[in-house]
Image (cartoon, rainbow, N blue to C red; front, side, top):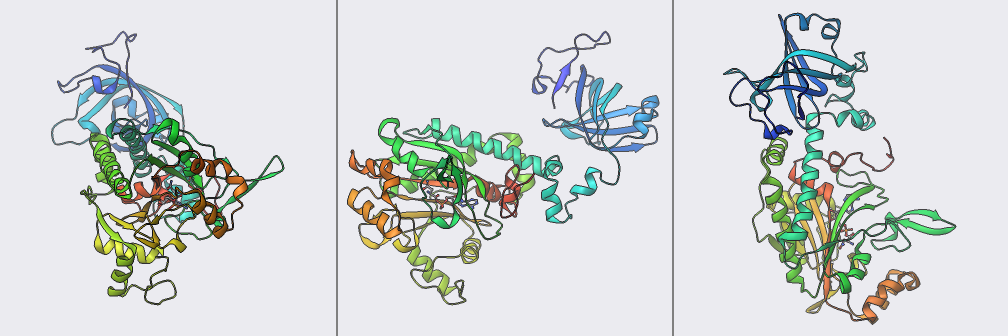
Length: 459
Ligand code: 4AD
């Protein structure tokens, strides 16, 4: 909670220097006279006492109003979400009573700053968890005021911080952050999910991935990463597909496929470790997802061909209701069933050439398959897709033809194979899927501020 020590107040008692909340120690009982601002999260009236839990984005604070303070017009007509300013003394909560952070503000003066509407449209009725999902999405701006939604956003921020820390200082060699463009004229992950728009009279797209741009950075910047939106015009409404998502991508130079897998499990494990090392984030994660299991390294590795055998053995059928065959795309439902049964992170590797992107390198020992990996997590399924990249010029040219791509627009990418090619690879991780797994959310839509998905671009 953001607490202001009110130095100008003549009634000031016991002022301790230190301006931020965590620098002030209230454990000795009667503490400082302070001023706080926030919104009414909830309130409860007892005979002559009004308990108001104030929220300000930094935390919750129980504020206790007594005597005449409970009898004012403002107090008697108090509504949830009203913004207020309060003055008083901070105390430890009496034994056997509970309040956030075990403290409460004994209020001696307050002012209402902005009274919240308390009519039938009040926040609680609009954002009740059992509301129709569309109502919740329409009112996302109010839903975000709730404890669960705001907790997920705080875990999201901590996770992003952790990714940056890991890339910059927890791995060797480190990765440099770059910011590739979102408006592009190339398609990378298939034409079917492209958002097209008119760019000064030319055809352009919203980026599906920054991968090709990251590859161009390797020669002069070394290993690189980016955190950028990716856009997919997904036709199907599933709980793990968004039209706009936050894509964390990295590209590593002079590596083997095995290096790529080792790097990936290290990054994910360190991100979790760092995020959970912050007590507030840890509490938020376990409040949201009490059974969250920190993954153990090494992650299980399973070749695509073995996954097909596994699915056949477990009688999990493909989308046509038939037993899986080598060459089938493993659909979302089958993938999730498998991941949930195995119940630990899986690196699914070596997908057939025909079902993977044009730029993927073939496995030199089995040219039917690629050096590719999907990382699958219980409850969500695929959260990462990566591969080694085709590093031979002629092979890449042939791949464009196979994919029906005009190489003209890709000259800047193809040049990488002409001017000092190298064995390299990388991956993209969907942040919302990572969070859905970590925070135990049913859908990725709960893991971003304002979700964009089929037919929803508001609020
Ligand atoms: O597997 P994808 O399509 O791979 C790529 O885009 C590569 N070019 C990345 C790379 O190698 N640099 O997407 C990567 C990840 C998926 O594993 C998933 O987590 C996420 O991006 N993703 C989505 N997340 C939410 N909504 C969607 N529609 C998503 N599509 C992909």
